[in-house]
Image 1 (cartoon, one colour):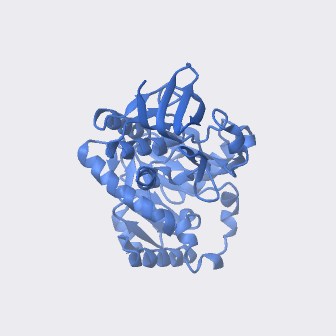
Image 2 (tube, helix red, strand yellow):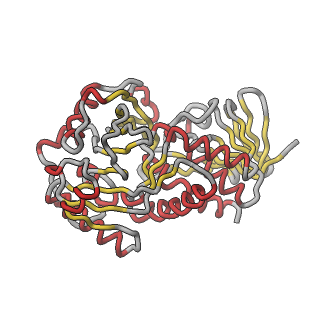
Length: 381
């Protein structure tokens, strides 16, 4: 009987980075994935790695993640592109928040550049001049091709770090006896380890459903759009806009945040949690999004599988204020889902050696690498 030091259930970004860091410590690791390949939050997201948008607690994990991404990209092509992130302020309130956030980040030692309207236009000429008041630019941040990155990371864990990976393997029971954890699968296999970490994403009915029912977790549904290749545009960086400044946690920490009001023309966008982001893929196509709708663990199905044309049209209209994208250029619309928790993540110890870690929200791609490193270090100290 082969025994592992760690079994990780769930091969999304959170689970795979737990496996990665344990294997880097020389541990024997088994990574289990219920599907043929991960298809959840990790590949449904925007693919922006933006510690700049996080509060101080989570930003430290995001900044460490950037260092880990530096290392990974030096080893192979993980589709990681250090092209920076820019936040475009479109009115005086957003300018004030941007200036305060830049000052806060400078004091924290995080590299940021404050750009005037003219400097912003010069660096990002595709953006509409009428929208721009000023901007702040974070040169160390990454964009990533979310539809490819996780598969490359899993392969690296297997080929370079010696992780054992089993896909199409649904864990249906996990228990601990006499200090040893046992994972049983739907195929009637059993695996044994010293530790088990469950990174279940927004899947709540396969393992310990009674725990999730009372966890405080909710699921967010996001609508996103994609254009045909628009090679006449070159966005250069992650583009985040005034609505993002009004939404992200870093700006909520600014002294002026409690004093700003929402302009009337933005109220309906705020109702659907819309803030406009742009990311250009290597083929020239542009991802535009996103919106946010919420449901509790017990009523996730109320969110539905489809997308609402009304929300898509609201995003298209606001996006056109910033970038000249014809309606006919949009070729794809989809919904992504992720679990989130009021505490920033859901950590639950089932027994001495079995625990759940999920609900990291929309910051998984930005923070999981740094977060998992710290947790694995604590687990095997």
